[in-house]
Length: 162
Image (cartoon, rainbow, N blue to C red; front, side, top):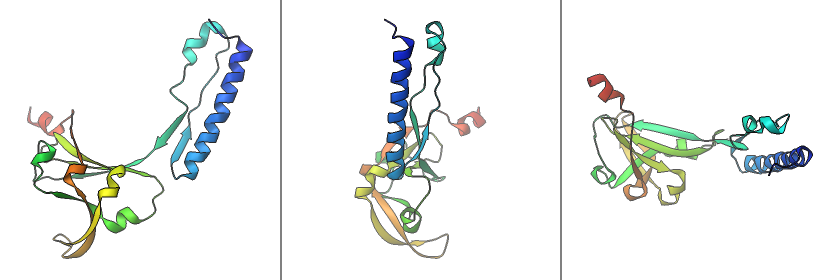
């Protein structure tokens, strides 16, 4: 059964108001939120061409690292018990776009480790010598067992070799 146009427009207006309230709350909590535009069909016959793709979108930051000399094919093949996430100051500083995860891609670019922000409760700081910089730096490390292995379905290196 199709709702009468006036009833539907009222429901849409209410849903829009609720979406703005939620977007405002998420914004206060540090999320970058966009209210997705939507339209109301001019008549019942055209209603299916006016369906939406959701009410809100949240933008989050993902940092991507590549280990060009370590070609692990699973989490268990990673040669470290604890994984360096990044320098502590980079993680601790305030960012405009909220953080979602770090992804470390293996040498062959066939997969990677996902280190999501929700695993941060398990992270710890450690001072290590940075060979590239030639001095000690403070890093966050994440236990390997708190990471998630995933395959990369697109592998540009395999395409280059074909």
